[in-house]
Length: 224
Image (cartoon, rainbow, N blue to C red; front, side, top):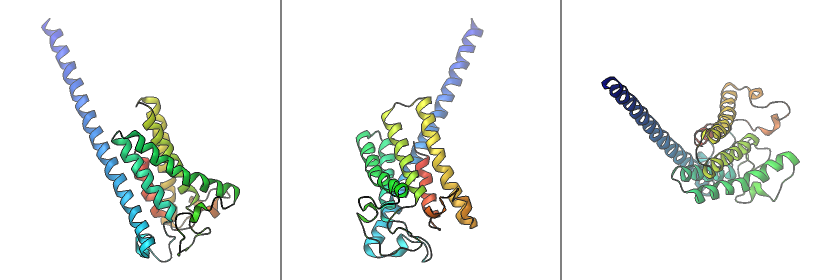
């Protein structure tokens, strides 16, 4: 009987230790997501202020680099708010922010597919006065658009469904895709290898030197 009691006690201790470790990891991950989404939103807000105040340093790292487009900054803020709210269990706010992001990114995606300016979405909120290396002034890059759509889908999916292995797998897959896109973009731009980020005939979608957007998208990928 004593042996059985000791075995049960040891099992309970192991379970308690494992539960404590999981709780610590969950707290760390939550704080990382909240901090990361806040930082991204602040950088994007600075870019918007820079456009209105005519301070290029806030949205363009160097004169020969493509600027962060106004719509890009808006989507960063919306997705960051969606991710932040999702982690605070504010479901309506999270879903609303992500859907608003989709209202910008979906027309932009169709602009690339149809090669047409749809609803004037590129300059609907702000008319850019700097268009360095931008084939379509005001339009965010193709893969930036795709990444925002994936981010919004992942956040909405994780918000609507209770956490389980299936939902976690979907969110992890979507997040991995975003990280892969961002990583390839960062490596390609850093090494000056445009082929690394311009698969097949999509090269004209990528204004060079937009690596800072790839870096900012990474924290969003970690969220869902």
